[in-house]
Length: 326
Image 1 (cartoon, rainbow, N blue to C red):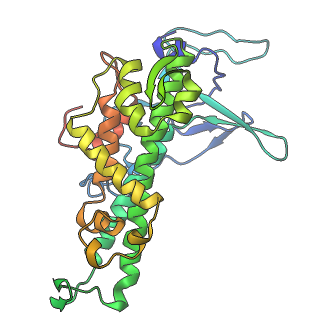
Image 2 (image 1 turned 180 degrees about the vertical axis):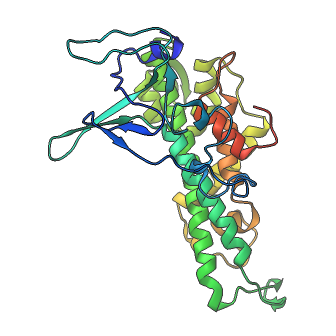
Image 3 (image 1 turned 60 degrees about the vertical axis):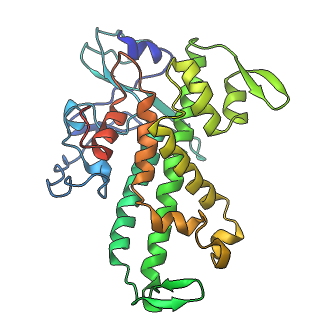
């Protein structure tokens, strides 16, 4: 088996097929139409609506491994015999995916190829940022007028619905961008400990140093601490602190904190707080697509050295930073 399969040795791999055939949880094949590639017009702008539809990028959907949001997808380097009597065997070159299984309330078992949680969150964030940009273009402002705090403009009362739609999409883009980083940190910590690559870490706390295992690191440390301290240790990477990626993360964190912990001054901005970094300040002073881009750039900073980055991450980099060579 190749390196990716060694990481998945304890996972059951269902015989999922590529192309126009998919295998259901019960093992029965069902036919589906092959989706048409997205048009060139839809692919023209980064972060366009429906990033999951961008299936024609090199090395992604065209690699025959399926949806780009798969958590782990690879091919067998050698034949694999059946693991148990009557079980499936696989030929070299066959696609292999990490598999998840759940029990429903009716006590039936449903299996499916495991998605990447950061990929799902960032797909939501990119779609929301695209919708936000569309709503922002539709905003209408009045002529400049005088206010108690200087000159300003109004959004006509009859157009506030568009403004509120814009705010909602901003909330989604910001929240899910930060969620992607939380997911990435936690799954990286868990994988490192589970594969024996890392043991308990010594972490500085207010009351002194503590030795923490994976579960304690996930539960007790903030996302900021995980990115600045823990991930650089377990991945042997430079800390992102002081880099451009960190600046983007701090802007994302400020916007996320303002969104999730909505204080009264964020809900009703006025007077002395007009120029503060309130929730609506973030929404109306920055491009929303900058938030998922910040999360993607941070994850890319921690990509494995000397190895291929996860295909979902490469896909997102091509969408968010088309000017970069991946």
